[in-house]
Length: 499
Image (cartoon, rainbow, N blue to C red):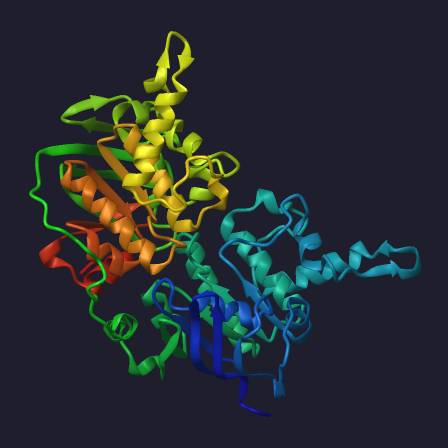
């Protein structure tokens, strides 16, 4: 039998304006645990989608189990034994464990009459769970199970479907220590039974522990594949980073003023753990961290979007009571959300409507809105921010991503905010528009505002920040001034590894 289960040669994937994968070669042996690591945006998710049939490769060849695959579909992937367990579990919460495992593959006592053989399905589920989670109640509804047990149901479902290749995408991201240990034991047992596993994780210590081989992706390219025994965590990080920050971030030096914003002891049960920090006038404070680190949750707790259990917030040295987003706006805090299409803009409304939405009180006089003043303010701001096309009458949903982001910024400039929280400020916009957004951030701090920038792009965070705070699982694990910035240090802190 061929020792190689999966072979990729020269795989490329091009989206409009983006080369997500570039000449990727990958070989995965039968019965091994193969680690796949890389920074955010390295191409891991795109590669998974090609393997599972959600994307076709633009170029290249793909062999699985000795057969060349010319066109993979999700159904075909399931039929040949390729399964993926994503971070977002794909289960039916109102159905039982047995029903989730057998859905789409039901057993019938009388097939012609479509009468289910529930007794046999239960017996097979009990036998299956002996190797995966013998303590689990097969009759329990999935929504009554913890995240760790739900993940075990996903694994049982894949094994029952005959998975030969099991892809685990950040499998421990939502698990506690004990649940993670349980998962590692299951991985070991699956390997002993001949199941091949691709293990994708930002937690490099876990990769080192459970994998036999590791492949490093960077900017859509394979940097190298090595036996795990030949590499240490330091080697992983050097391979993942491997570059210096290019001069594509127009950071300007601004004298820092007095403390403008501070948060003390921000806590939300199970999500945020006693987080304190401050930002000065003229400062850009970057927040770095992996998926699930709690960065966005912190911004939502500060601005009253989510309820916090405890913590104090001060503006200009005075404590402010923020319980709702309206309180946040009144206090002078602007929150530019990650999802501008659903949370930052009303896409079916005009640029004028969106620009003035957070500042309507400024235009009220004797109970009526001063529509002329609103239009003049909107026109001035889209002119200053170089929004294209230069019309306040155009519907926001018709603008490009970069111009939509400018409209969001215009909205908060009109609100007279002092503190700006940018969550993924350049996600989904092109390189030219990114530079324009960076320049707008420069203008804000030059005019005395304080900026908090949450970014998954390490280069962006390092390129634009005066200081960076790193979070891991709802806790601060590192803080670095600009002269201390190091991709290696930040990556260690992102992984929760204390140096």
